[in-house]
Length: 181
Ligand SMILES: Cc1cc2nc3c(=O)[nH]c(=O)nc-3n(C[C@H](O)[C@H](O)[C@H](O)COP(=O)(O)O)c2cc1C
Image (cartoon, rainbow, N blue to C red; front, top):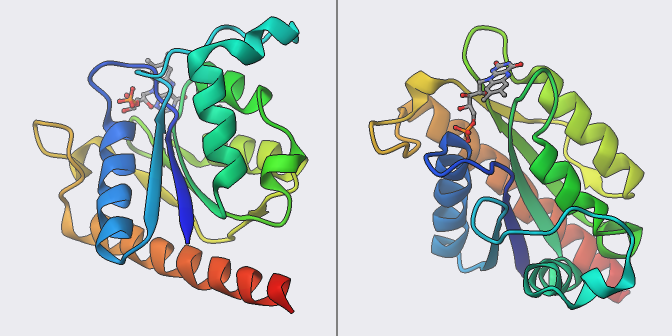
């Protein structure tokens, strides 16, 4: 099973990346083949629709990883009640061809309080536009869920992410077994 984990935060010191790295480690411990795309490190151009963009190294990496993925674990920061512009820009390089009938988990890093839910609603709507099977359960991390190195360490938060990973693995297995019949 191949899962693409996406960090949707462009910042150098990112809590969103902490969720994505935690998820990638747990998936790998379960024997899942993980690819990792990080919009803060794999710098994409701004999507313009120009076909020359398809030759960009980061665009090629993203499209290949999404083509090959059988499921997605997508992490976004909440910026002004939505997903990051950097993640939306990355998703604009992709189409339903990469997402159709593939399960996805969505998670967010937010500023605390009631933050995060709007970013997840926004991301869920966009992934629906890409025909992904977005799992109903989701997770928002507050700053207090991370240590000083921005690793996701708070116990209940890690248990929530573990549970989401179990759902992602189970649903991806189900879809794969049905598609072989
Ligand atoms: C431009 C900007 C807008 C933000 N807007 C929100 C918001 O609407 N709701 C919220 O809960 N947190 C908001 N925050 C806080 C971030 O979600 C929080 O710092 C999160 O950790 C950012 O992810 P990152 O650490 O991966 O960059 C905002 C932060 C920035 C920089």
